[in-house]
Image (cartoon, rainbow, N blue to C red; front, top):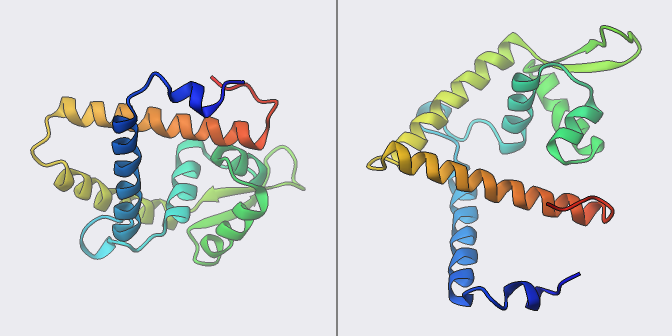
Length: 167
């Protein structure tokens, strides 16, 4: 396995330093604003809740283990994060359609409404932050950020499971 020194020896250290610095600033700014959106909805849903609700909306009802696997976190974390969403009526627990003993989590109508409010607010924030950008610039940034997040996710998965392939 190549060492970090081997992997970076042909790359511009100044560019890598600038990149890591900008990522650090992005992480701080994202946490400061929580990229929560604008208006009354701003900062009204934490990151964990947003990601969980979004996953349930995109992929439909699922069990805790499937939700955890899809998000790259452990089941106990999902259970802990879902509890307040169930308590506030944003997520409901239902019986699995094929195995009545199993429980699946499902976005409730209230959760769907709330998620749409938050998405709308966050879309507005993204429009404001990227005002003056062309559609091509927005698409390029989204493509590169998606690629960056995927690489980070693959790295995290590989660190958790050394036998997992890294591509």
